[in-house]
Length: 454
Image 1 (cartoon, rainbow, N blue to C red):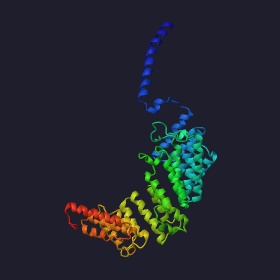
Image 2: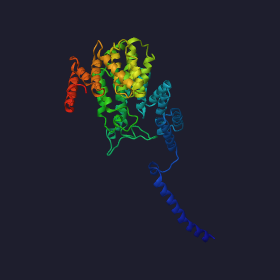
Image 3: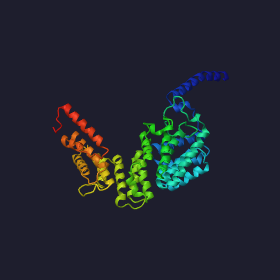
């Protein structure tokens, strides 16, 4: 019997081994690459990784912050010693902030930073604290402390990891962060570069807002020294990037000339209203960074009087800013109606700088509209600006735009030519008017026109 049993086992053994081999081979062929490379494991580290991946998907992909918050807290509670714990503690603060619990988020992030100021993710906690101070509290000094603290933290972190660790490896590609991936100075060569970029964006703005324009310009120039592969703004496939590269150039240029989107005569109205002035500058910052939703919210907060009552001319620029943001968030028709709230009713003549600016903007966004009524209103606005008693850059621009519309769209060539021939000599746009007139007449000669209407 013993011999018989042994023979049976020997006969079965090859079959079992072949079956196991085929199963393992099939699993290796058809499993996802990440799974095929790593052996299955069921220890605490892998359970923490699974939970972290789940929380990241909820927060980043689905914007479902309340469930994500619970999962991050579970990771911190159950896997305190895991490398996922610090990342989760940072993301707890982010989720609280996204849920509107600003005070709790601020307290949590402060406690996280103070527990280990040089530890992983503490730089990102300083960035978040600086943004809370700046965007929620409108506390410039507090924001500057956080962003300059981040700048010092980055210098120490770069020194700790060494220069070689900050260079792109051979055949490096643009960073692609997957849900659940731990991203910090120890795992990603580009991490400190990206954090440097984000720090420079906000620190440059804070330095500009306090009047240190030269330091702001220098801060923005620093971004250009970051390796192109690491810069978030250079990545056209990143849905979370904060605008095109030239937005940083706009900020740099604004620091050099001393103003961003609001002109000096508009900013001067808020000289004795520091909170309102900072809110106006924040809208300008969002405008240059193409962060339209944030810009719209800031303009709404201004108009609601959150930073003090607005009356008369003090209300004009926030209204203009709100209309400008609506172009991207709600469309040109909605923006047109908001701009028109600034256009005076008396003969349609804009009496102030911002009113002229609003009239021009309203005309510019509707002059090629498919809505005939809006096109007609845009021509009326151009004419009102041209007839304004006080001429400025907006009235001169209106003359250029109306002349082009008359020639190129309305078939009223001679009327358009006359606007260009009689262009005011004191305007900086006169060379453009002369160029357009010369070009149009040249086209007429080529087509057999005699310079008049056809």
